[in-house]
Image (cartoon, rainbow, N blue to C red; front, side, top):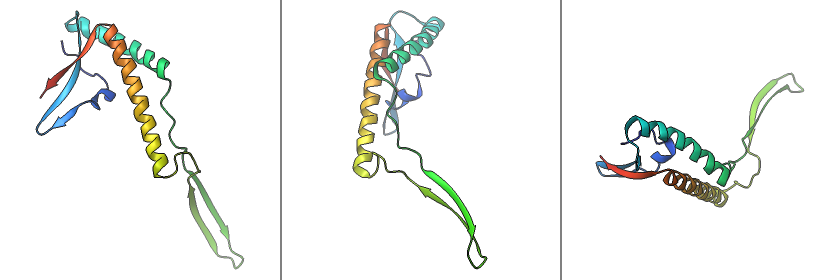
Length: 132
């Protein structure tokens, strides 16, 4: 039984090659049909919770920009106004730090998917390829 809506993160696993693409779907080792679909919803929720408990929250992104609106009058009576945007100095500043942040996000995603996939396997699910 093929179970749809495996989740947006699993779509990242899809491999595109030429006109054909390989997709993955979860299959239960014992359940089929509606029973498998209902159990999939339960198991996906439990395994999502287990993965977040094991690896924690995703790494924080860079702090947001600060926007300041200003206006005033010059000594000669002229009016000025504008907007200033500043990016606070952060550990994500510059290309090397951006690459480090991307690496942290990849490591987090790999750890999350590992725990999630292991949990699903313990509950009788396996990923199978579907070529289209």
